[in-house]
Image 1 (cartoon, rainbow, N blue to C red):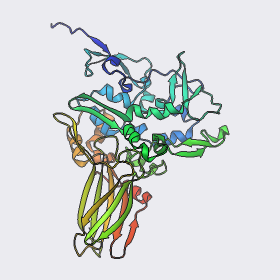
Image 2 (spheres, rainbow, N blue to C red; image 1 turned 135 degrees about the horizontal axis):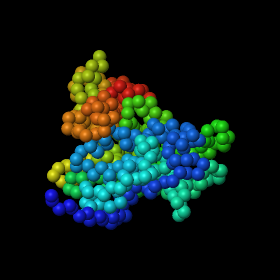
Image 3 (cartoon, rainbow, N blue to C red; image 1 turned 120 degrees about the vertical axis):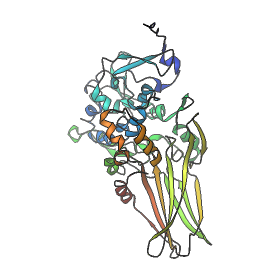
Amino acid sequence: MGQKLISDPVPVEKVFPGKVWAKTVAQLPDLQGVGAPRAENCGKCHEEIYKEWKSSTHSEALSDLQFQAELSKTSSPKWICLNCHIPIQNQRENIVVSLNHGDYFQPIEIPNPGFDPIMQKEAITCATCHVRTDGKGASYVIGANGKTNPPHPVKIDAEALRNRCYDCHNETYELNESLVCSFQTGGELKEASKHFSEKTCVNCHLPSVQRSFVIPALKRPKRNSHKHAFIGGGVPKRFELYKDQIPGGYKPGIALVGWEKKDSDIVVKIQNGNAGHYLPSADPERHLKLELVWLDKDRKEIAKDKIRYGQDWEWSPKARKVADNRLKPKEIRDWKTKIFSQEAVSVVLRVYHVRLTDTTSDYVEKYTVGAPKEYEDKIKELKKHYPHSSLVLESEYNWKTKKVSNTALPDLFKLNESRRGE
């Protein structure tokens, strides 16, 4: 028999100094007046907020089919990825506190006696941002408003809640030459501060609403609250969630400034009019696909043109960004193109927010194996179950009549429910 390898444990914080995502939020004991710090328990009083969260990308962070496909790859450092997708120790069956020889592919795991499988399925749950432990080991809720009398301990710290977004959404780290996480939304927001008097993630992604925080039976007054659907690019994780996007606060970051005919050219002006960060932001594979579709007098499509706004990366042999033509906040771009032919009488602009291309999707379906059974069959038919993109803007311009017709956002999202693929 060969000699048994001697473990050389190196603490995680020594391998990744100062990185919040390197460790989970410490184990959270039951919360006084609430019980286990699960979203389902929070929802017994905060019913409306709980329903919004249930429709959010955050609640789908573990069941996300693309994520599960990536997680199943042998090249995936699973425990690190899970630190953002199930970030609380209660959600982990095993705890990683050290790495053998400091190698993140050799995590040393110990069983977690406080593992909560129900809380695990909640993914980025209420407690991810709102619950911590005091110096005596008791759990408390972090709030933003105060002047209430909740059944649980509460500490008001709005800044801590706002800054929590950056722990996952403002991190770029190179694990090795081909494994790079690149989420720079917080830095983009700071760069754009000259355009906004006060812009935070909360302003757009958790819009303000006047309401009672809790169920009517508790008879609490209406106050300034925030929607908790955490609306982003308008591409939900399941087709069933399209109906919740607009009620949750979605509006496109991209805006149509206007159309113009110059001699034999058509100019369409677009702007990153609403986003406080680059458009699109976050995952490097996200991009905007813009199409111009030329129609004849019978509204028959006779030609199509397209452009792309996003990042371009090479992933092998070394991951690196090779190009980036995203729109900065408030930036206006002109798309100038020749009128296709004398037969064309109008042109339609369509803007798609693309999360996953058909090419990547086909690769995932064909080569990814090893995902849990509850996800594996759906991954094999990814286009059927997983929204790849959303049509977020549509406008038609007839240069003969100067008429502009814009499709209403609810109509676009009704259409998105039936679209499949990019």
